[in-house]
Length: 214
Image 1 (cartoon, rainbow, N blue to C red):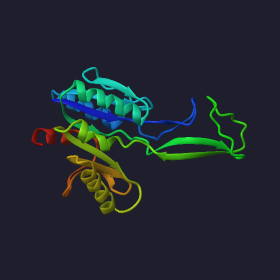
Image 2: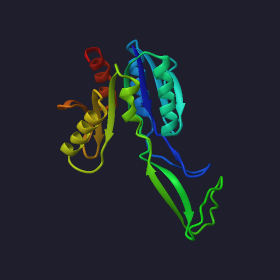
Image 3: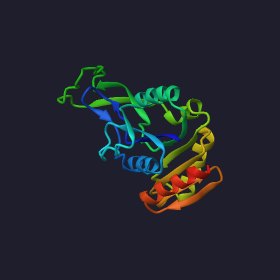
């Protein structure tokens, strides 16, 4: 089966040397891609250029991406070139992108590198492209699994958000983790948590087996 795994962070530029991004390392996605390849699948790993974890093994095809829009373009190309059976969207993408940067006087700052001597900068942000919302139209027959990382609230709140992601984006399942969920990873369907994994290795092994039955 041809499988896509997205991993690592995206970024959105402030200027040509500064960016908005997050702390995602890409480790889980790389390990999952390798586990799927070891199980005999043809795996393509779309890895954010800011990921600090190593590249996947040579058994995995790798494509780099930068911004949310960049990842979307790569996915659109792959949807035309490959018959994709599953998508694991582990990448931590930006929720916002920079519309404008202005100085305290209101002057627009659009230099390639915003001068560091400026006393203050105001950034206006707008929502960035939601890549997950476009996965089902691109891959109508694929088993699609999203990810939900939640820090605030109770475990039930995190699971509810995972279920909402499934419903709103017409995907098969969602893996939830973060402080709100607690230790480990919860594999959720529209009916709630179906499996709990305590480590990344356990989660990867579970997903390989789940794919056989999904």
